[in-house]
Length: 124
Image (cartoon, rainbow, N blue to C red):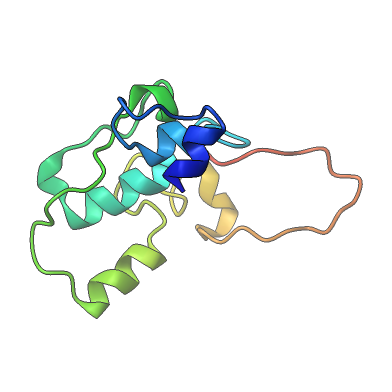
């Protein structure tokens, strides 16, 4: 992988190996498309790290380390909690406020409406 990055001038051998900086095009359709998900995992498994939920540019600012020490051992239930999280108990929860809709549901269902012009992601 790093040989290809070197051949394609994406990385030079004198730089640290940083997967995001080398191979990412940055966030996709929204500034917090994947970075907020990373933050969500860190906040659940290592809240003591107190990493920021907001940043300027995920690729160039490098707001998150490659890894952090978890605050307690991760159990199967902890993994399920991460996968089921809707940013519960945070400013970005999709189960409270206007973003939750009239029924307080964090689920987002497609309307399959070809005429819909609404695009984007949920953010605060």
